[in-house]
Length: 342
Image (cartoon, rainbow, N blue to C red):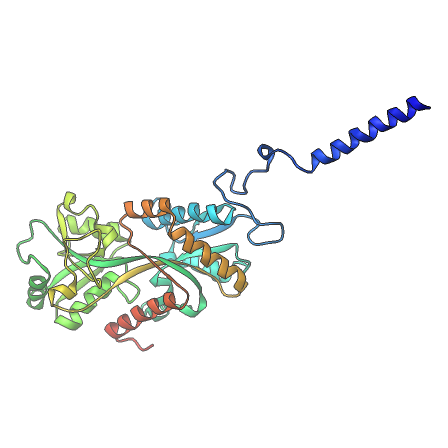
């Protein structure tokens, strides 16, 4: 009997020790982060957002600056949100395929958002191809990039050497430039419209497929000047041309020797492309707030800033009402130039 009791006591102690051990596994056996690596952040508890991968729609082809910007922000977001952020390229119709997918074919559950720019917000006012969508159809999250417009000339140009002499020349001599679109949605075409309206310049805009095509035509001598963004002219000098003016409130850190239009005294025009992120309407306000917070943290991520700087992307963070006002102010400027009613 004593022997049996001893055996039972031993068994009871063993079971007790086993139970204690199962409640505190060694740290090395913890499950990996949802992103698949140790840097992926801490995933949310079951039932909380986010609990699965998030999709970022990019309306441009893989490998371009917009696509790379999306991939850099996706990596930064993964660190904070703890889940993968997968970039899905949906190129076509100037990014409208992606935006239509976001607004019309996506559940407002917070697991899909998109890269948006001024074309998305201003398409309603494009008289050549008006869209029903307006700025109010997007749930704006955060703007990361402000890419100011510039004008550039070839290094062997002799007809004009700076912004003032270009404006004077164009008053009596027709010039040609190329632009991806030739309407209010294009910053490049709107620069031409401004020169026409404010300075009686004679400019003809040739529509092309994108910024690279405009640059190719310019370098081949098929157009007289190049209207582009700061990010498009980072390799200008090595390719035989140089920017002469930037349409920004102050000089660009990437083009410190290039004066603003304001500095030249010719005019006070400011024009830019804005790249940010948005949801479709109807997403839970708590999720919207969390994603906005995550995008703000991504903006400050050192790796993200380094990668974006390498592309010449000028980072300026806008969120909430300030983001919307930024877009509305530029819209007012363009509507006035194009003579379009709001």
